[in-house]
Image (tube, rainbow, N blue to C red; front, side, top):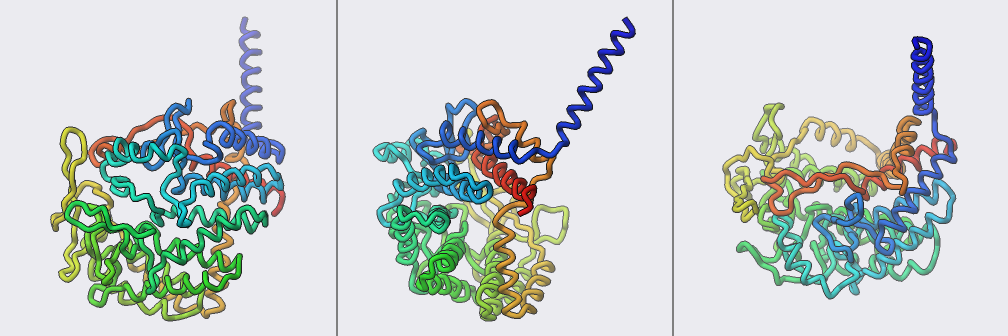
Length: 490
């Protein structure tokens, strides 16, 4: 009996050692390729809708979400939705040489071109049941408290949250990779849309064609305003620059430079030399959503300083560095907290003129968020990012460093940055092995998903469930692509 127990124990020890060995053995190229193919086949043929994607799906695919709860007839354009998958598929083709990934990317392109607005841009989503969109807005979208961009259906296209820019960028990447003429009309139409929607002084509205018909909470419709918020202007600039680099059309470069100049034009004068999230057509800070008051914005100012440094690297023109010292001075003068244990050093919003911090508060009733209001009373709860941490010394150091670069060195740094951003660092053998073994039988990476409560995200806990997440699929594929390139030595 003792011998038997010993033999069983020894056998389990051997199995355990083998498991450790297998877990730490670097996956072979064949194993990586098989995992990538299995996962992508499942995502494209089972999860996607005609080649398009939402954000999240329940494990059994019975429920689905974009940024808000979605219909089965919808796909999401807004990242990390359909164009995000498409760009990854192009990199998978480049990394593996397998033309099947290019065929999958073609399906993504076809569905985006199908859903392209007649003017040339894209809405947040594409719906294959257009007749049901109004009802969706009435019953679902307009009831998502806090997601005010979904309160009203304009029927136009949006630059918000990288929507039109991401779809355009994907078509640009696919066309210049494949040289397939099928994609050129949709691409040119999208780029012409970006050119046509630009205001003469260089900024862009949040949506286009322009609409003015949804005033609410006592404020005018904000979608025609010059908009920095959520990357509207910066995403269009970087899209046009890449289009110029790849296609050679100088109109794209000229429009991008006008966009860069808008940063200089829209900076407020000292002593409040920062930027607002959005401006009316008189270049005055303006209200947008109920929790986005007409004000200077600390986070937008930090982002704009970073963009201006990149513009210098791109152009070698020192004009783009000149607004930065006064912007840093405003940030220094606007510090409201120096205790590092607190959630932030700055308020997000500051009143024009007085420079007093503005804070957004909310009210709920019967478990549903009902309204917002703005005053000068600080908030302790994490209300819509009312606090923002600014490392002023780091901003100063980076500004001095960039200012010291010659135009040639600045351009070299920009090109190196672009190259480095194409793919993440390769996964380690252990990480690659875990990704491969964590696929279920279908080819799905099942993950824990947390989704904000759209009735009242401020007071209610998020919805948590196990499911299929598009961002996770894309991230895991990029890791395997990078790992594959590392073991191939390129």
